[in-house]
Amino acid sequence: MIPQVFLKPQRAQPFFGRHPWVFAGAVDRVEGSPADGAEIELRSSAGNFIARGLFNSLSKILVRLYSWQPDRPLDEDFFRERLQSALHLRHNILKLDQPDAAYRIAFSESDFLSGLIVDRFGDWLTIQCTSLGMGVRRGMLARILSECLPVKGIYLRTEKGIGKLEGAELADGLLWGESPPAEIVVRENGLQFAVNLAEGQKTGFYIDQRDNRAATAALAPGRRVLDAFSYSGGFGLSCARAGAASVECIDSSTGALELAARNADLNDLKGLTFTKSDVFNALSDKVQQGAQYDLIVLDPPKFARNRKAVPDALRGYHRLHQLALKLLANDGVLVSCCCTGLITMEQLEDVILLTAQDAKRDLQILERRGPSADHPTAITCRESNYLKCVISRVG
Ligand code: SAH
Image (cartoon, rainbow, N blue to C red):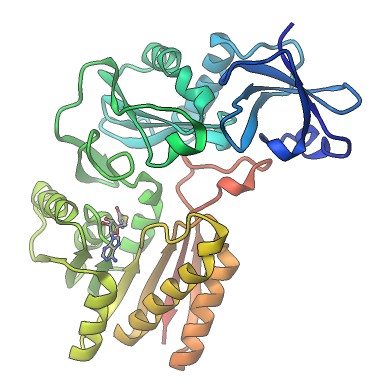
């Protein structure tokens, strides 16, 4: 019999409701001594079957749930079916399966695969395991993916801190097939971007911003554009291609700016500038100099990893917006991105409201956006809805 995890009284309702994370505090007892990463059955205090999940005594999330069917083991067939369903969304519904395309194939809880993220960059896949249960299954997952997709290689990327949170010691490296070359070129909205899978940030390219870049580019013709926190130039290049009057990219990472310059060359885009600086300092200097722009993108990294850090994070967003409003000419477009999951759309709008009031500027929200649809949100786990993008007109 597979090991059984029994909940405390009154704690079962979220899991009958298909939330996938069982924290240790909800658990009364474990019967059958499961190994970390092993399959278990979750039961209510009365002993009723709730779901099947993977156990990890080293994580605050003691059990992650995957199936609410009593007789369905979490075996290779099960994960193949889940991955095929994730692929069906991207290929048959969203039609993202284009040559050289970059898109997310599986997004953890959002695809009912808690702890597994798979991205595709043309002929290569990256796998990130953010749970021990998925980490120990990485070989099997890579095999399934190699059977479902005509790819050349599958590479494991690890996120800092996961070892500590999950007790999983994984190292970056090839899981299946050939090693990726130092540069893979992918295509997004007709532009080419060089991606370094083994060393690039995140998994090499921020694919979640694909549609937000297109929405921003649509407003860029004729405008003086400032792309703050540009990384490899995703927003800036999209605006340049759309006919922006000028484009300035700012990032604190030399590697990111070299990649952005390389991408401008790949697309034969001229006249962009790339400045290495802290964005807060660069924007303050520009305010001092009386610089003006017609479109500003703010796409900072995650500012808070836990609740305690949220007030400081909000102050950071507030400061960025204050500076941006000083730099935006009349009828300017402001693109405010926030990838901090702990900050809600409402809180981001509050930051925008306060800064507009202080600056005495009329500001209208034109679009409230999220990540592209290959980063969906499962309605039973809305915690994974992290990326917000608000596009405004500033009078
Ligand atoms: N807009 C990008 C993604 C931005 S990711 C895209 O579309 O691909 C965040 C970027 O902010 C990273 O490239 C990181 O190097 C940069 N960064 C982080 N802190 C910074 C700071 N204080 N000043 C300037 N750049 C910073």
